[in-house]
Image 1 (tube, rainbow, N blue to C red):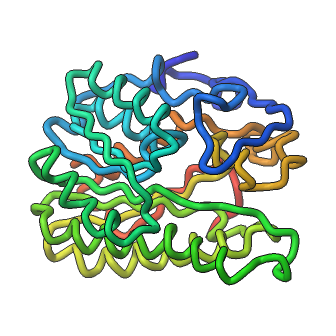
Image 2 (image 1 turned 45 degrees about the vertical axis):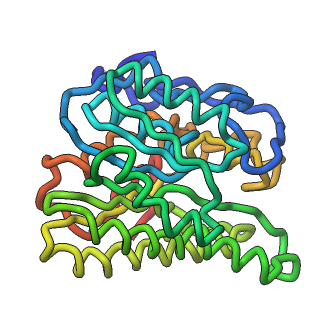
Length: 297
């Protein structure tokens, strides 16, 4: 596969993903995903855009979070990743790639649904990295429901606790320790604009993240801290095979995009690099849509 810097037709620049029906127990692993997505292991080339930076990425063990962690390390950043203990296999693989770049990789396993872990995560990252100037709120939960009659209050509570409440907790803690020039990047979704009928709670959380980003950006800007978000479309990650959508929908996954294919995680990593770097110094409260083509406001 080509580097992300090479001139190429975007329709064919990355392999078409045609996954067979498959299922993993939540939270799922990249190591068991078929076919394997490109997270940048062999294709992402760094340009030194994040020299000496220190980043905390939630959900940094797999999927989009893993691609961002790899890209950040290759741009010169030290990286702490937060992940569930069941994802240790993926986390170790990402840490190995970060350390291969001569950067620090801090592994911080735990459950963001547990207040004690959530409340101490930023401090733990600061202790491991010696400071913090990038926070990527990326961890998320997605479970499909055929009908709202099947959608329990417990699932709704858990979705909002992980997808939204954790962002409040971590952003609050990060803003206490971040110096001017720092950035917070949230992961929302095309679901915030174009919600699927089987993902009402997930889509609602992603719309909330979009509003939260724009509100917090106004508070943080006078401190010299920029808050933005990235809105992914159909990317091939473990989220898709852990009841994130009906198994039947894996056939043709992502082919409804204007490019006719699903995205590989490496294709979205540059958006996070841009928002974390000084190149985006005048970008505040924005949402970058990275979806292969879809109607958005």
